[in-house]
Image 1 (cartoon, rainbow, N blue to C red):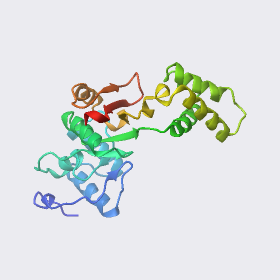
Image 2: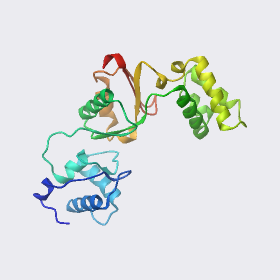
Image 3: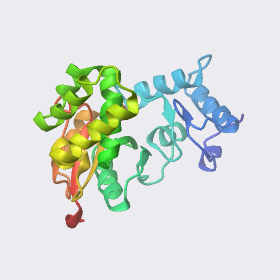
Length: 238
């Protein structure tokens, strides 16, 4: 593929390339050619992207992905365009909340982030708690919850041989008895609640600093207190 400084002005990436990307064949070939121009050859595309992100962008935790209009794409093409709106991956957010998150990402120099959790119904909370306990164990999950949540976890522990659906139903009943918002902040009806994966941020420290002063953010928790960046926004404030 021929690619000159004039060509890069008209190059168009249709989808993301690399780790977890769309990886359309023509896009992969285009990115591979651009990486070769930066001296990265004879490598698989994800490894080459990661090396480019480390050397050219100074990312300590490269994501191995090139997104259309994103920071890595602009660096690869030498784009002189203005700031590009950050890309949000994972679970969808309501637009007023998405705009607040995009401002935080722009302020902290990020081109994208992944949302791993949002508001939950009591039924969602029971199911998610069950799956997390099954995957990580009772003790590990109790470390993440206050007493009301631990009481729900105790329901799981008291039914070791019961079918999954019966345990989830019993956990849901206990959640509703205690009060969903007392069990988990994610069950709030007055706030937008979402988690951002630290692994999706190449500079979590900068994200944390921007989060602390972000307009519209009512409350937040961050690692190591919470596995993710947990952010809450009052619905009446937006």
